[in-house]
Image (cartoon, rainbow, N blue to C red):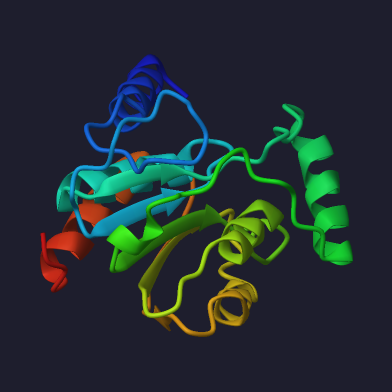
Length: 196
């Protein structure tokens, strides 16, 4: 990676992860501010930052509220340890405790749900998020990043965990492509019939 690519990546990450204007309120007392009144929530889980970039673009593009899904106990910093822990959680059906929940979920009609694909499926912490919230009657629009293996069975897992929600076809992109990600997400939002 040359200096220009490194600088571009740093700038894109800084812009995408900068403080957001509107965040969903949670049941934990943390730094998150009150919701903006938007009927759309962007909830996401991101380990490396790729899904965070997409979440930030959607949030700003639609004027939506933002919520970061976090486990109560963070995954290990070491990538291989995280992969092993996620595999064990997936194989056992374990859903880790969440750091917080969205306590005003009734205020939202639409949920953009973002997560990376781990082991060809949805990360266990995202399953925990779905199990912890009643999504009946909501419209869910997934957005996913992956390392080259596609969505795996994540759509089937989403359908099982949100059986009374309307799940639309979402956005999928291979990670590590920040500029292409920004262009594709902005084009997707502008070409879709999502209301602001």
